Length: 280
Image: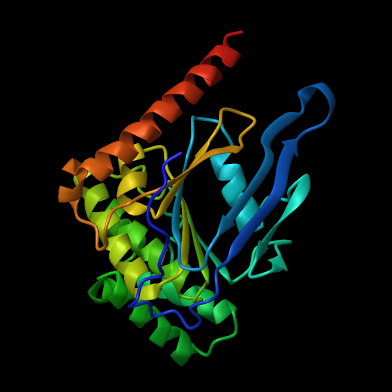
């Protein structure tokens, strides 16, 4: 296990409360189905994530990464154990947790502006207040000029930026991201990674980011949590010793390469186990 710098919350964070966003996953197991057809997706997993941390979760295909994220979001209920956010047990979705999916999941009949304003309106904000929030976050993701466009008129990267703005519009203490850049081309993906880090630096929310891309995880994260082959559990907690702000040039530095190789070796070993189990 790599041992590196202790996490420090971004100094420039705009979050309302710098102490919000602490996640505790306590001995969580998640099982689907009953009897012989039951599937153990996650097993005896415990994680502590501090307020403002950027954490990436890696693991072989089918290891339960998304299932664990859905437990934090409140979409999936643990079979045993519990998840808390700021010491409050998660029993369902809530405005304190924003979610960004791989598929953009925008409302196609609403404009970009209306998509971002929708959350605050549903939370009880006035039309004027919701509009102000929408403009603020569209400006944050560089899309304020596109507020009157419809999602189908935007590129994939732009749609995902709208998705991020929409997820942040309720001022969540936690931002959950399930392979949000997986469908993008390599160049757009890199630009989105840099844009996300800039937003995180300014906003200061806790980020839990699922990815299958080791380079993406090392570039983005304070910590990379690596899950075992199914049933998934955390087997490594890699703290990434790279200064911030991050830049693509860091990919050639010894610290980056060390963390990358460690993650690759661990993932490769777990993927072999998963492949062997599937062919047993």
